Image (cartoon, rainbow, N blue to C red):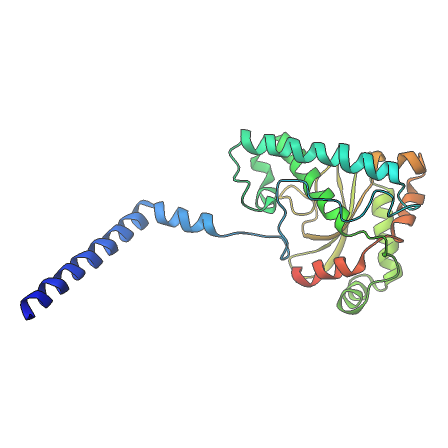
Length: 251
């Protein structure tokens, strides 16, 4: 019996040694290390965005009269859908793993093509935009978010003024943002085209918690050239609960 036990123990020792050697060999060659690194998922403020368009969380007419039904339908089914489709094409062309969050790509967007930058940004921006608005929106933020806004800007009213100025003065097409920066302070900024604060090319970087689309396709049917009126109407549909949720996960 002892002989059998010794043989069994020897076999287990050899098996364990072989496995350990294999692991060390993989680490030495970098194969295991790269595999582990690939398993780590980086998300933005506790949120992760996929590469496919998600359903609109309300009907096309739900935000009227602030955003009319026709504008919302065209915006979602044409413009935003095109960004999502083109993003999938770019991901395939550039070998991007679409099972990982889009935020990972945006954080190093300078390494990718213009097609990836424009459509990756366009898709991310719109996915956020739909979800920080609601038919039951409006009013003012509360709790920790209001405290943070007051601490960063002096008052809620001062924040609104800065955010509106960023939206109104963005030349051409772009976005206005409220973001959490690396020191957990709230900052207002604007970006051109479909850029956003997550990108390594952004002038002011941070985790976006509120964004306003000021491309003409977002408002022109109803407001024509009156962008300031559109910007003012936006506050009537802001979903402050969703913004607060993003804020608390970002800090």
